[in-house]
Length: 525
Image 1 (cartoon, rainbow, N blue to C red):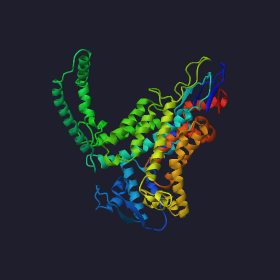
Image 2: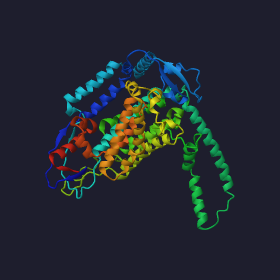
Image 3: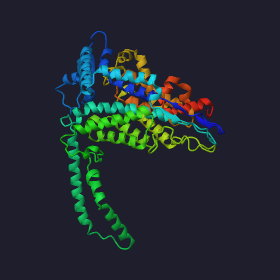
Image 4: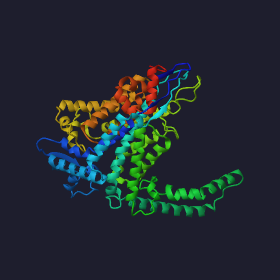
C-alpha cells in the first residue's frame, strides 16, 4: 500500500473513540483457558486401538496415562517401542488434565467463562468506557508515496506474537515446576550448579594466567601504553564481575547461560521464581495482546524471560520452536519505538501543512523477518530431502501414509486425514516439498504480488498443519512472520470489517481507518 495524504488545512474533527476490541482479545484468552476440559469431548465413536510410536523425546508431550503405560522406559533410552491405548483412556487422561489445570488455576470453569462473556458484553454496551481516547487526525503532505506501509500489519504481527507468548508462558506456569522445578525431572538447580563450577574453574585459570602475564614484555612506547590500557580495562572490577557471574558460567556446549535465575539467593527454592517469571510473561504478553502495540522494554522483558527458561530448560526447551520464538522476538525489538506505546508512532509530527506522514516500519527489519521465515521453511524441506529416509524422496513418497498415526498428539480431524487414499497422501508429500523448497523464494521477491502469494501459501500451509495435528505453538509461530508479506492495503481490501476491527482494532487504528475512509489519506496501489 502506498499512502498519499492530501494537501490542505482541513482536518477530521476530534472525537472520542472507544475501542472495545482489546477487551475482546482478553475475553478470547479467558475462553481459550477454559477449553482443555472440552478437548476430550471431540473424541467420539467406538473404541478403537491406536498405535503410537514413542521415543524418549516425546515424553514432554505425553499424557500421564501414556507415561504410566510405559513406566519401564528410561528417559535416556533412545530405543523405540510400540504401545497401545484406547480412545477412552485418552479421553479420561485429558479430562484429568483439564481438572488439574482448573484446580491449579484456583478458579472454577464457570467463573472463567462468566468473566469472558461479561468482558465482551461490557465492551459492547459501553464502548466509550473501554480504552477510550481522544484522537485527532490532521492532514499532512507526503511528497512521493512509492512504498507500501505496514502499520496495520505491525499491529497484527504483535498481537499474534502475544498470542504465542500467552500459550508459551501458560505452559511454563503449569509444567515447569514438574519439569525443571525443585523436585522436577531435570531440576534447573543442577544446570546452574554445573555452570557455576565451570565458571569457577575458568576464573581460577585466568588468575593463574594474569600472574604469568606480568612476565611478558609488552614492548615500549605506544604499544606498551595500548597493552597497559587493555589490561587495566580487562582487570577492572566490572569486567571481573561480568566474567565471573555471567560469561564464564557456561553449559556443556560452552555457551553462556543468560538467565535471571542467577539472581536467586536460594537455589533449593526456585519454584517461586519459575512461577513469578511465568506470571510476569503472561502479564506482558496480555498488554501487547490488548493494546496491539509494544515498546523495546516490553518486548525485551518477554525475550529475557524466554531466554531464562531456555537456559535452564534442558531437554524440555530443546525443541526448535523455543529458540525460534526468541529469535523472532529479537527481530521485533527493532520494529517498535523505544518508549512509546503508540502503534502509529510519529503519525502526526506537527499540525502544520508541511508535516509528514507516519514513520515507516523499518524496511531492513521487515526483510530480516522475511529472511527468518525463508530459512525456516528451506531448512525444513532440505532436512527431509537430505535424510536417508526414502519415504520423502521421489519414487516412494509414502511418508504421509504413517504420519498422522505417529505424530505427537492427534486432534479430532486427524483420523479423516489419515484415511484419505494413498494417491492423496503422495500428493501431500509433493505439496510439502513445493511449500518448503520452492514457495519460500517468493518471500524474497521484489514484486509485491509475489510476496503476498508466498506469504499466503505459508499461512494456508500452517493452518492445514494445525487442523491435522498438534505440534505445540510451532505452526502458530510460523504464521507470525508471514504476516509481513501482507501490507496495509491487502488487509484493508481483503479482510471483512469485523475481522479488521478484531485483528488491528485500537483507538489509533480506528482513527487511521477513519482518516482513510474520509479521503484525507488515499491508499495508492
